[in-house]
Image (cartoon, rainbow, N blue to C red; front, side, top):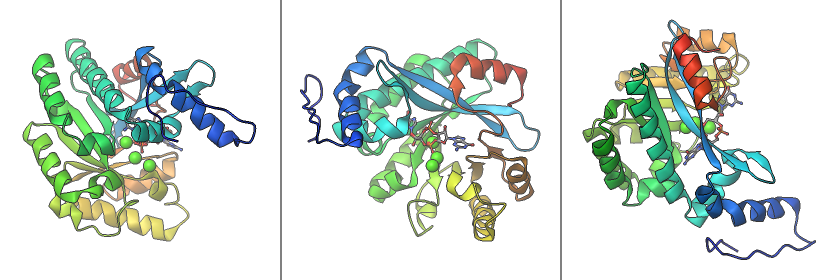
Length: 279
Ligand code: C2E
Ligand code: CA
Ligand code: CA
Ligand code: CA
């Protein structure tokens, strides 16, 4: 059964399997979690491949669940998406991100960009643009430092709506990136439909570039294609120096991955950024 939100009573029975049980445990507390301040944004550095300097970060949600401990977004975002909590939670993430950009501007880190993930529901609802307008007006931040990541699959749920949304976002000076590039859709024709700044090559392709010649070819071709369309490229999930060298040799500008830095609490990321280098 889907959650009806707060106050919803859940029944646990011995016949339930562990996965269902965990799901109910997460779902029953999810709404409360926002009020109780149990969410935190971790930041993962994005670095320039030429030179290695930190140019910004991606904000990644974490949930400090009172019984389960730290819960990663892969476990609760799908539930939040189904139950509708993703809308207030997405608002919270955007507010926090803009606040952080304000602090950076006033605290000597004004060059850093911050990327935020948008869910499918946020993209296809009507609240996002008014909310962003309000946040931009209140904060006075440079919109070019806020990047919105939209997964290929979310964008392709309604390509015409997405095309308009991306145009609206970019007309405000915000940056737009296509996330998980290459995983969701078989045709690349949408790239010319959408106004974009950047594509993020999915970790699934980066992982095996040293061992799988097909993945190496796909990644090299993706970088070339992006460049020919005037788009920058971020490679996700870079874990080895060999992957970094391959990407650099193919002209990929930016990367993110455990080789440079894991997602960490904000203060830790800021220390890293002040030191100038990741990892
Ligand atoms: P994503 O947007 O593709 O984020 C990248 C994921 O890859 C993150 O997982 C990050 O910790 C992980 N990662 C980064 N570098 C490496 C690496 O070198 N090796 C490996 N193995 N993994 C790496 P995380 O933090 O668990 O987030 C999972 C997904 O949850 C994200 O995938 C994103 O789709 C979603 N998510 C996270 N935060 C938010 C949010 O605020 N809103 C929404 N709508 N979704 C979010
Ligand atoms: Ca992302
Ligand atoms: Ca991704
Ligand atoms: Ca991914």
